[in-house]
Amino acid sequence: MELKAKIIQILPLQTGEGKNGTWRKQEIIVETDGQIKRKICVSIWGDKINESILKTGNVLNISFDIESREYNGRWYTDVKAWKTELAGAATQPPDAGNDVPPPIEEELPGDTDLPF
Image 1 (spheres, one colour):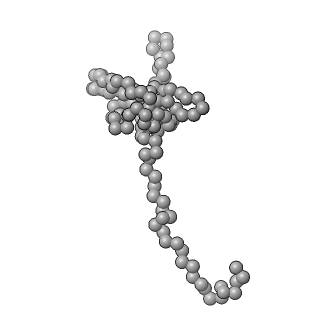
Image 2: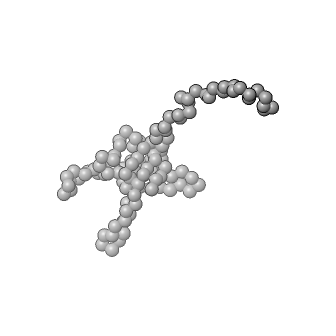
Image 3: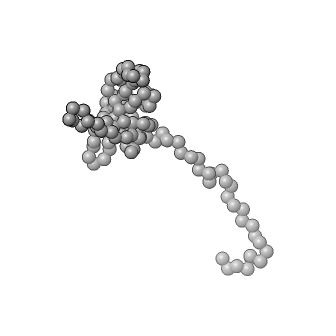
């Protein structure tokens, strides 16, 4: 799933030790644009954390998965980002038409008789 939203708050970085080693988690609060603005807490884990774009006010394109789990009879849902980038920062392929010269119109014998 994908989402375009503005960062309105950056929560403190969380770190810890697990059975697979050290982990890091950065949570951000984003707000969607539109008639009804929605606030969403997005979790970014490990090497997916890009501090250079995580600034309040930045608009991001966020690719994410939603995951729910049960604990003690209650359900908890996480929005986990697997890719974040500044909105509008995606590289566009160059327009191949700009490097091609216009076609040369050649006059062929017998074409001069055409009325158009």
